[in-house]
Amino acid sequence: QVQLAESGGGLVQAGGSLRLSCAASGRTFSTYGMGWFRQAPGNERDFVAAINWNGIITYYADSVKGRFTISRDNAKNTVYLQMNSLKPEDTAVYYCAAAVSGSYYLLAYDYDYWGQGTQVTVSS
Image 1: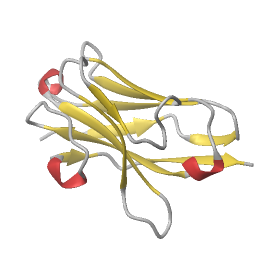
Image 2 (image 1 turned 180 degrees about the vertical axis):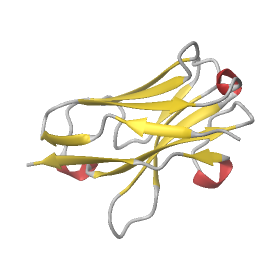
Image 3 (image 1 turned 120 degrees about the horizontal axis):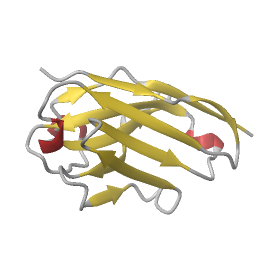
Image 4 (image 1 turned 180 degrees about the horizontal axis):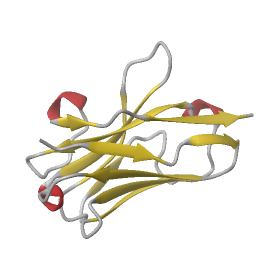
């Protein structure tokens, strides 16, 4: 069983930055693929970014490409999402997810474990 805990959300003005963290329990974090998703009220959970087990491969949604950066520190069992140039439309609850396979995925159902989410609110 893997437990994921997101942190770093909050309220920020448009154009600002936030860095989300997702801390994982367990000894096998370094073998997991990790992803970030977000869900705004009334919307489905949308893919944001993903990274494979060793951090070599990353993938981003078009809406965040060039503004967000996903990274991981396997020594700290943590994955990060650096968010720059934030826009009001980035407002959502952000979730991290782990894929036991070690690969990266764009679809939520490919992930095995999920965190509880952290709220990000971007004011205009």
